[in-house]
Length: 93
Image 1 (cartoon, one colour):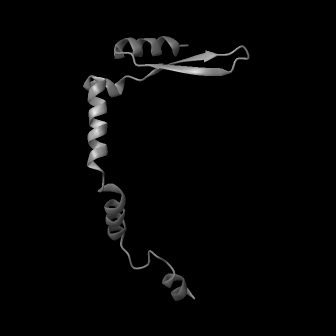
Image 2 (image 1 turned 135 degrees about the horizontal axis):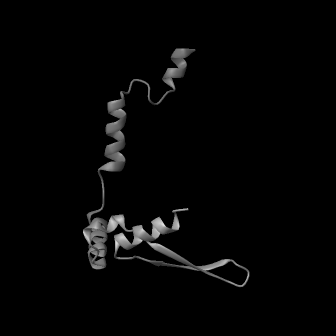
Image 3 (image 1 turned 180 degrees about the vertical axis):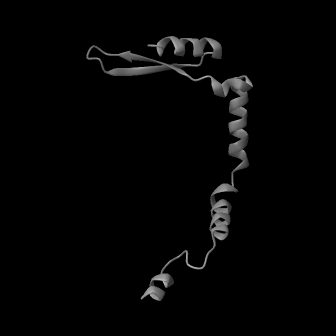
């Protein structure tokens, strides 16, 4: 019975290394250079400083008369220090 179960196991006889190499080969290695170039060009067009990853967007909701969110405006502050100070003020209870 155990031999029959192993015969139906698609991972039987495969090492972790073999499985990982197959996953990387299928999902982690192949990419479309045209898509990569498009992403790089779009990012360059934003003219963002290299530290931008540390600055988070600020979200400002707009509500209708019933209190439902109808729109969210997203802005990107260019000053991480001001953003961190505002967060500190908002969360220092």
